[in-house]
Length: 156
Image 1 (cartoon, one colour):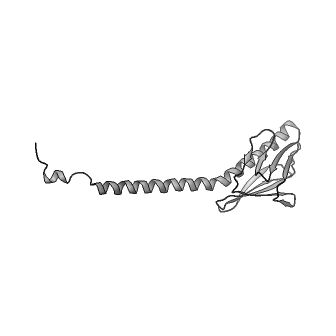
Image 2 (image 1 turned 120 degrees about the vertical axis):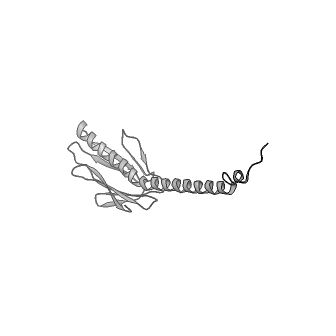
Image 3 (image 1 turned 60 degrees about the horizontal axis):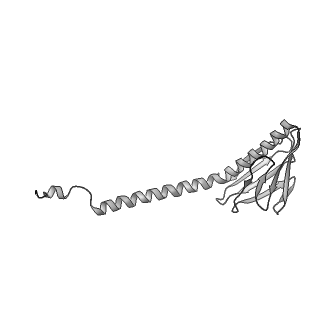
């Protein structure tokens, strides 16, 4: 059996070097995971606003195509948006919700209806969402055209 030479004994990594490399790898992985989680939260408010905008625009298109009045219900207590066809959109409890119909701002626990008429008009509504991330998005449905648009209020 051959004895290892002094050069062979120093080959490779020591246990301390391996532990340091693993610790750095774990740190980089955890920072990356936290960054992705924060990014998902930032998109959440805008994503809900996009879904609500699509729901409103779908109801408007149905009213024009079918020729009958369509409506979207807003349940302020449960923070839900729904119509007869589409899946329910429910905001998490941490979200703030304010609805303005006409000139009246409503924040209590009522069921509200937004109507879309066959001539393209609607009852109009302004929906302000504020997410737990501090971002606010407003969805506005124009009463004259029935079209809905969203816009970031702050925290862009």
